[in-house]
Length: 489
Image (cartoon, rainbow, N blue to C red; front, top):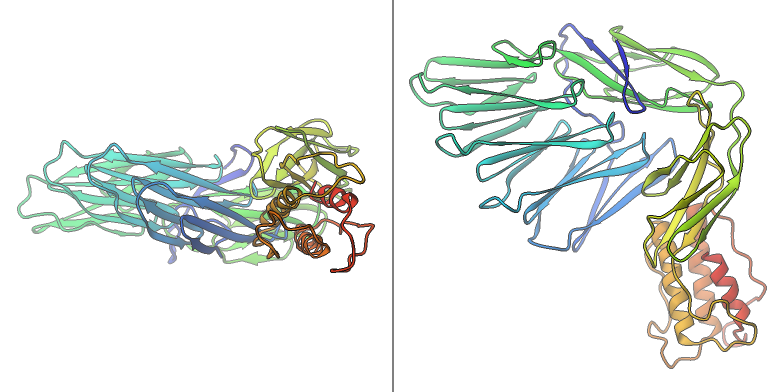
């Protein structure tokens, strides 16, 4: 059956068991690059539908030391002090989506952080915490179980196949995220009446097993009833596809969140197929394509013959607290999607103008806009434009105005902000502290070179300058700084 949930189409079915595993959230883009510099964690992944690296840096400066940092199947997680951080890239939204769980009110510290099959799980004192990302909702779904009323302490935490299980004394706990119900579903078994002690529970095929003395236990999740039973988990197929309409070539991402065991055999209706779990496919031609997975369900992808034109002449202007955007309207557009690189879609205005109120000072932001038709099909993104949220001293500069060290320092800050937006390091400069140093042609040439590299990386046209600089000979004029200020926006 087909359900539309928050944008993507969700496809579900009960499947017969065949010999490969499929469990829980499985993002389409998993080749994540991870780096750390002091308190800052940087993650990046290449998005083929946008043709660019999508990067995010998280500053975890407060409290404790970073530990258990790692990337597993497209999910990045780490802990620091009382907090556990999780991030994943959602190609539907064009953004890294994060979750920060603060367990500060519990005694002792976070332990046993395990990331597997799109699920992060850890323990702290009497509580076990777990969460997964749901692409239909565009958010992390977190839950915790408080076992304070059970004798003993939490041990033997296991996280596999989308199932979390652990042991406390005579009681075994287990939980799974049901994407159709958009909720964690848990169960508890108390074995106090059996001889011996519980062995550590084991997960296989999304089914939990353990023993106590001569008694063997099995618990599996049944999707139809939404409950745990004394049988193996019933296989349940679940996937989201997005977008399902647009202009060719159309990238469509399929994100699997299935429970149970089977293999994958996607056919895309254009002669292509895939055995990947969460494939991405490009529909090159125009038409209507029936996509199937193992023949258990299907969905329709439509590419239109007459594509929407991409918006043109996007202009981003910083106004002291907000960035105002305007562009040429597109015939046939129902509305527009305004995207900010590194953040994703920030607005869907019906007209060809938008104001971004979520900007911070001393930053640079890169914006793009695409048109969306009433049937959900989209144009390509139009030209990118840049807005730098720095308020310059003596703005506007007047011709003949003497150039001061503070003017140079501010321009360096602005250029470095643009380079940061382009995922480039700060520029190397001569006279890092220019106080008391006359502004020279070399200083301006360094800024032009650093800015040209950043604009090219962003996809902006080169800035034009009226003055050819010769270090040691050219006298710096106010117009040289006026042009640079315009080039950093």
